[in-house]
Image 1 (cartoon, rainbow, N blue to C red):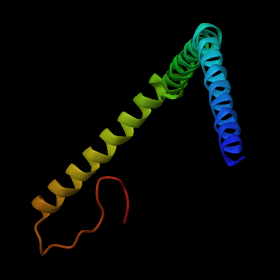
Image 2: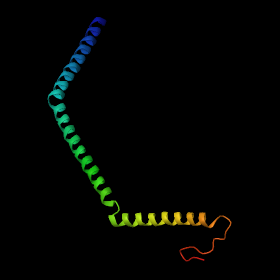
Image 3: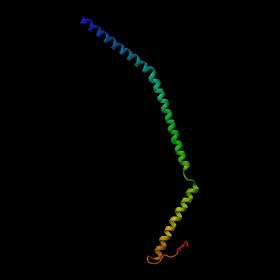
Image 4: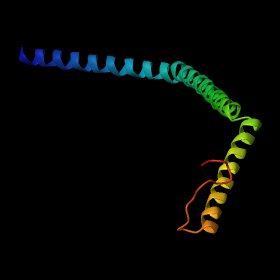
Length: 113
């Protein structure tokens, strides 16, 4: 009687394992033949789309940065202001040098008291 139960359990176990193995083989073949190629194709499409989006975004960002650069007039005005400031500093320094350290500074060339 015990032998029959053991044989029944072993037969059930073998049947269950063989069913699992067969199901696994069928699913693997299905995956290899149909699912994997579809997933890889979709991933390729998504990769191309992402690449194009990044390329467009970088190009647009670069164009926006170039457009946001100051115009020639602004650059010319800025360079003129820097030049005037530098020349004023040089004039002030030379005036101080030629006036001497101990002399009163009084009025200078710009009409200030």
